[in-house]
Image (cartoon, rainbow, N blue to C red; front, side, top):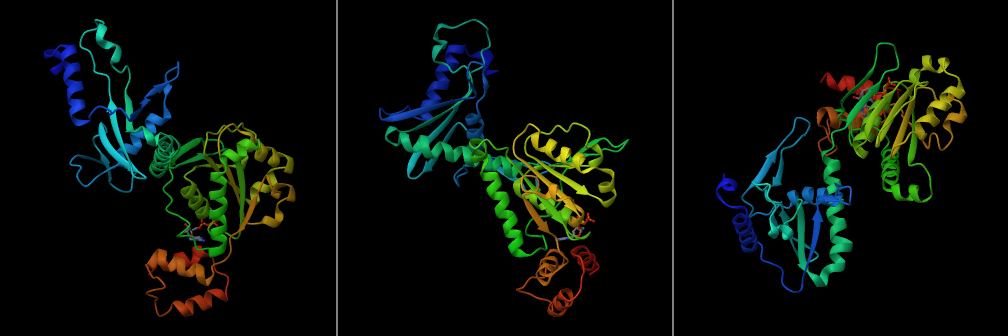
Length: 377
Ligand SMILES: Nc1ncnc2c1ncn2[C@@H]1O[C@H](COP(=O)(O)OP(=O)(O)OP(=O)(O)O)[C@@H](O)[C@H]1O
């Protein structure tokens, strides 16, 4: 409506005046950084622009009167975001930073205008600050914005489970990975748990190092132990921790070329029946083929109930870097399960906990069996 009534030049003038009113022009000592939405001659998406957009939405001050509220079906909590991204102030190490978002005004007529030179041709963010902080803003603040946006994207990522059935009639299927397992809910030896968490964290952080030394960025884990000790649950806990999608592969499709995208987390199983079907060299082909797939970070997890039946060639570092024994339930495992299923914690123990823990230590019972019993309560 406004576009139809006001001539383009007048709209431009009003826009500039309003912007100056709410966001005063720079003083002579100020410095301005411009972050365009697209960059380069091919006008590709500027990742810094995306990061700023995500980051600014998280700066919410008590005085803010307009917030965006949202929740998608996959999100667990309601999210609040700053609705205005056009005049936001931020502070970083006592530096005042002023952000503004500039969007080109849509013109109602296609006629060129000689005053258009100063108008932005594409959406952009402007960041103003006292020029004496130039180094700190460039070397610390912008990386901080980028890292924060990356964390937010990771937190919001909805994981997928891709089942790649190899049998006739079973194709590929993708569903949301809604497995609730986390390292906190895993009934495992706490030291072993911490070792896995540290190993995963180290792996995820080392992208640049792998690149520098020219090694493929990959890690292999072998989970072994009797049925019901939590191998599948641990895969879900690991995937939830590193926020990788899961590709559940079946050995029967080893002959097919397996294409994967980045951040793939592969789960596979060595079922007894499968082991007899495959030659060692066939199996090694599958593993090495998965490793050489194009893509980014890659974790492969193999599970087996019988590690002793596997050929040592499968288990060597580079194929399986970490071997994780999933054991029968222990007293400490029982504590975790009691907390998961009955909300019984060490601070409010049940009178039977001590007896049960003693019994569990003296017998072989899987966490799955214990969980089943606790569900009956
Ligand atoms: N270590 C554990 N910690 C927490 N829950 C567990 C654990 N082990 C088993 N459970 C519970 O038992 C159920 C079955 O366990 P899970 O499928 O993970 O075992 P598995 O070792 O993969 O078994 P299988 O070898 O038969 O596939 C899980 O859904 C979970 O509720």
